[in-house]
Length: 47
View 1 (cartoon, helix red, strand yellow):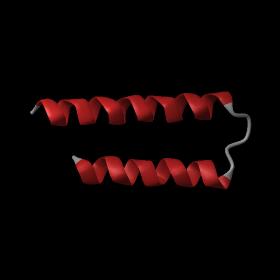
View 2 (tube, rainbow, N blue to C red):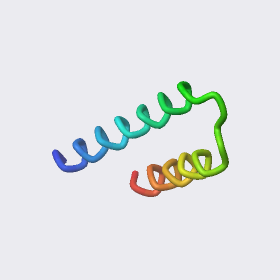
View 3 (cartoon, rainbow, N blue to C red):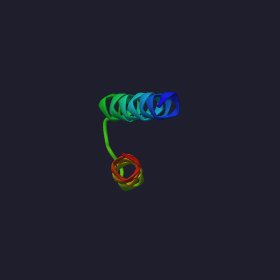
View 4 (cartoon, one colour):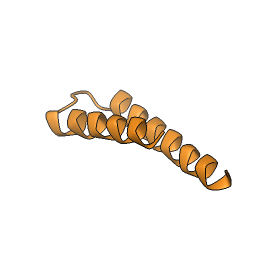
């Protein structure tokens, strides 16, 4: 259970980092969008 919680915390933290990254960028290029979409898929698959 601890492992799962830690894993989830890391994912949430990473998600927040990506969101912050988006907000600080003026233009969201294709590669950053792709990175986010891929990350989102990973997160959903790991649940």
